[in-house]
Image (cartoon, rainbow, N blue to C red; front, side, top):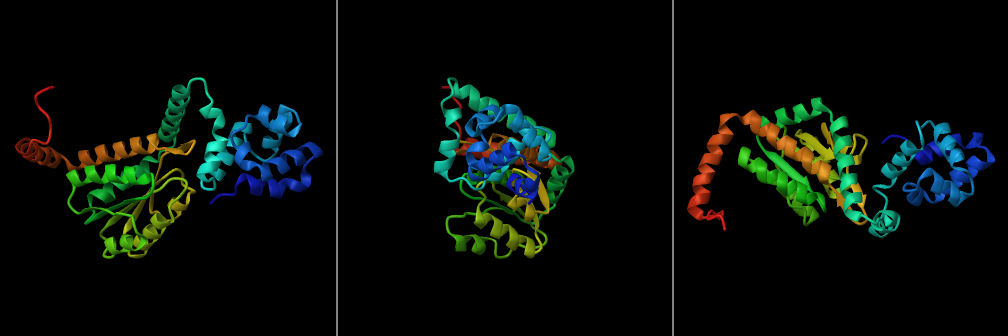
Length: 287
């Protein structure tokens, strides 16, 4: 993974002024809190001016304080316990308009995902999934919801879709025991990254499968075990994981795959509609 803010501080420590040393010391000891402070609030906590904090970020090589704060947030994503998450998100939770704060944050994540999505990797993912013998999908913890959603629709499009259940570590490897070079393994994980998911991805890669990682950035632990990286911005809202952007990316992937299958998808759904009607799967009386 790329050098983080703390590493940058350590590397530049010999050239700091007295005020910069105060900032560096505070961030090093309280990076979990600093990651969610404005420049003004951080300056007040330390006893220096807001402009000094802004210059400190620039001296570390960042375009501005917001970029340094974003780097701090990326640093702590995989380190914070649930209790720490609640603590650092108090400002959000105390918002006078919580729904607006949360929804606007999700909208921003969607915009960032759209701007930064690697279209070549996206198209490669579509191609390899379409041509795979078997498609394994694994997501643990909160990412299990994403894996279930993705595998549900993949199963409507392709044969050989396996949703890997991760209840017990040993069970995972029993389910992916025969994964091979003609298969695709899709691992989904966002901070805090699941070790079981990472180990399963590593195993699949060692067996020759094409590994697709759906994660938050190309420098994550998930990306390190991926042949193809699909990145969507995630965030933490108190103890919750905000997975709106990842879900939207998965929606785009499913639709792109359906386009790739051509007329086959229409024929499949025509058969399914007959089955659903016979089994009365859906309510049809409009009530």
